[in-house]
Amino acid sequence: MKRGTLNASRSTIRVLGIDPGTATTGWAVLEEKDGEIFSLGYGHISTSPKNRAAKRLKEVSDDLKKIINKYHPQESAVEDIFFFKNVKTAVKVSQSRGAILLTLESSKVSIYEYTPLQIKQAITGYGRADKNQIQQMVKSILKLKNIPKPDDTADAIAVALCHLQSRKMLGLYK
Image 1: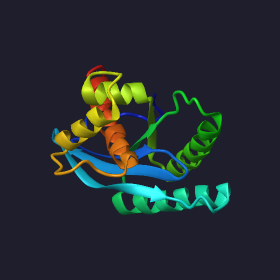
Image 2: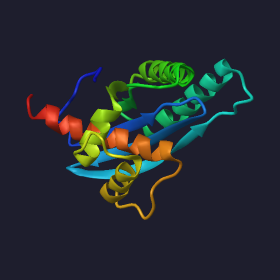
Image 3: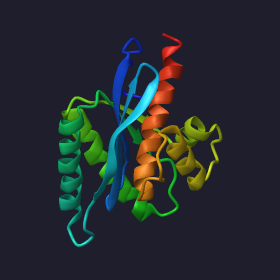
Image 4: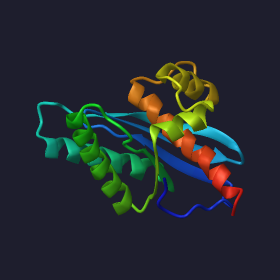
């Protein structure tokens, strides 16, 4: 679940949430200040299927470095691979996760990892929530007018929200 050190005494924390993928990687930067959560930015990184895998992974890494340099997150939350029916998809997502984790580590951003079940549980209170339920909660929690698109972006926000919720729970035991 985690790598890094939690610092529960901070009144402000900035978290980069990431939903890994090779074709589309969702990202979101949230800040929690004195118990209130604010969205500083969110979006997605897209790569062309026409490019070689190594070039696509470099694009994801380069774009992620730009996001880190712009927002200066202290911590990151990355969706972990839990289960894939398609092995080919799992391998591609694993490669993307590897590039993302290396970029975060090189940028000295603490890394925390969460399974889809943990994310759903933290956002909706139900580990089997569907995509629409997650998206509606993301919209509600951040008081957004619309659900962020594509789905990978909303998923990245959910990952960041999961981490912020988990920090609170883990901080109770410090």
